[in-house]
Amino acid sequence: MFPVFAVKGIIFNIKRFAVHDGPGIRTTVFLKGCPLSCRWCHNPEGIDPKPFLYHKKVLVDSEWFGHTEEVGVAYSVDEVLSMVLRDRVFYEESGGGVTFSGGEPLLQPEFLAAILEACKREGLHTAVDTSGHISRQYFDPILPLTRLFLFDLKHCDPLKHQQSTGFTNELILSNLQYLSKKNVSLRVRIPVIPLFNHNENDMTEMMMFLQSLPGKIEQVDLLPYHTLGNSKNKRFGMPNLMEGVPALKKEELLPYTDVFKNNGFKVTIGG
Image (cartoon, rainbow, N blue to C red; front, side):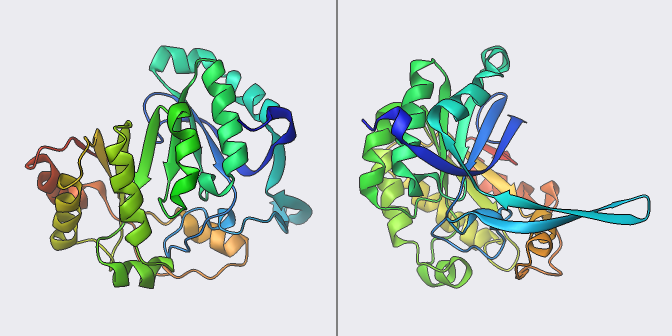
């Protein structure tokens, strides 16, 4: 295993009291860097693995004040562990824990393995939220350290997947099959995106793929598209590829819950 004190991770956010990133009350640690460039990404600042600076302006009493902030800070395992342990009582009361997200947390494999090992020593429930687009060799070291995998499934059509994320989906589907064979605790998260997979045919194809997996899927989370990424794109001077596309309401996803429920899956809207 990697030496704990020698490894640092680049983190762009730590969210306390998260309730949509796994069971119970959780702390979600967002690691920087993602291999995909999803058009609807709500964490665009997490795509580039390198930290960057931006000038933040705040209007106070009709006067603008500005300062420079860094997006992406290097933390040691001990520093992150110290922060997440502050809320141990909430994890214990709610059945929660710590979720490592991004970006793609497996792009920082040494740090991820080290912090997962530290959390396991403390008896914390651990979850890893992954896009699945990562070399399979990085999954094996964290299998015994991860209590729950939150695995994103976006589309079954490789060309449509490539057009909206930058890559085809073969590696993702292969890794999902691999994790299923390992009988790990596995939830599948499907972002429901207008003009991409917001239709019953695509949902049915994904349901059928999940049915074909050798292991059990504990739950399917349908995640309605929202526009929270728009303000971030504006703030960081990034292009907004979903400009003008309205957010989806939860009730618009209700027909898709039947697609999964009627075929034996436990399903939620919003995670």
